[in-house]
Length: 355
Image (cartoon, rainbow, N blue to C red):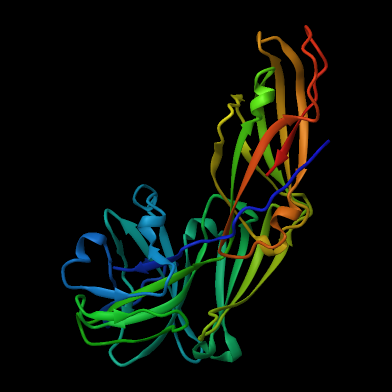
């Protein structure tokens, strides 16, 4: 089988800016409401021209802009409000209607270091431990049984900025996790998020010349890897210029992972068509990634020439340099190894190549 690969431009995914409103508990514990609710500010575009101004690092944008599905799906954020050296309370922020709601309570004058991730639905189990026995030095997030391939964009808190007034001008920077509790009705905070995974998007078409002779009906397209379907992740978060300090993945189980991009009959055209939703994956353990296609071949009179043809493309060359927080678009073209003279029916062996 002939295979051709071209690496497309590396696109740095816009890192998330989330300014919040609210939290119910990550767990079911209920502590006395002894303090003031921590408000996470909602920074919507309609208010940008009024009074509030938040300066954020280049490449950041509103979470609701990058993920508009948050409105329908009701995403939740798991946050850990830690007090050095080792006290921690897990709390949950839930997006409902048009804002983030919470019941996180903070106390006046107390220093909190805030860590966490979203969406909660992407992580089966999670925990946290202090770095160097002190949360002011950083933390390790422990995520259990996360999908190697996923349709969820798991993101981590990488910056915290408090403000006493909701209309105050603030400069939100990555690498700071400290928040000091204030008096009643003065506890507002902005959060920055960064991506844990890389993301792939696939587009497919049929070669123009080949389309004059044959029709291709793709029946399934599946991503496979030698890594298990689920992994555990230990993520070290530290204050400073590189908040996500390190990520260690461990495979869970011995079966090989796979992810279905298409599982229904679809006739290809000569124009590129996007396959499914973006596919997020743990790129630092991208072992032996392959794209497997199953398709039928028809002639121009709709006679079935070949049934259940298969094509397998290795993606390791395309993805060997992709990093966390980067997006890669892979374009696929179905084309023959060489052109056959038409007959009724005739032998035909198209291939799928990546570009």
